[in-house]
Length: 146
Image (cartoon, rainbow, N blue to C red; front, side, top):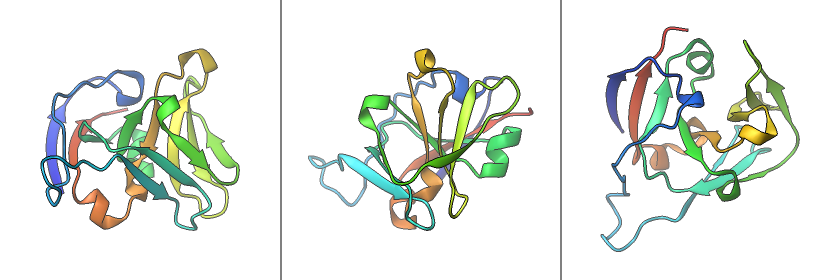
């Protein structure tokens, strides 16, 4: 797993992070790229399938993400499939972001904007991936102070 550190004053959940790097599985040939990844919470109640990330995963160090151990990828709502039982939702500060967690095991699985009209991205917590899949993805650290 590669880790790059960067400093920014923008909260990643409220901005459009843009990277030009496309990370590929080094064990695959140059003509193969996995199309999707699937992650589950610890008890496997919540299952999320999403496209293989083309940007580094974001390790946000804001007060909430640091506590959730969030390692985020950003996915268009039409490209993510969330299956399983209902989740518990936590919102903080201005109630703009819904943080979802499994009701059974408590793992933070994903987040999304609280208001329907602003749901341009679903944020998937890639810490729920198996170690082998996670180890093949690049990570960028966002230094936050809130």
